[in-house]
Image (tube, rainbow, N blue to C red; front, side, top):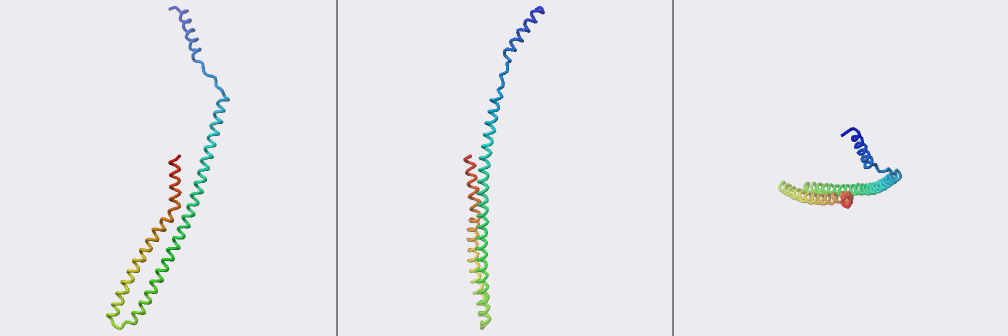
Length: 160
């Protein structure tokens, strides 16, 4: 091949490449419209997320308030039960001391003391059962508001 043919072949190749390597035109208005739509959609989603977070925060605050109110009520109940148990014990101890003072013999004193201790143990067992039932009820009552909020949140997350 001579040099003229090579130059002609190169010119043909360059012309073919120029024809097929054409870039599409860039439309700035279409790009700005797409960007605007994306920005509006993002802003809308952000508002929705904020609204959900606000509602969840308010619900959590209400649940915390209810939890603290329930804890206060449970504490008051335990205080009342404790005072009643102490009063009952004190009255029983004083009555027992009066009875012991009237004992006529050492055997009678031992018998009175044994009966008193048996009765006090029965009362103590009953009081512990009452306290156990009250504490279980209180634990459920105190935990309920937060449990409800947690379950609702988990349910919403599953739906989303």
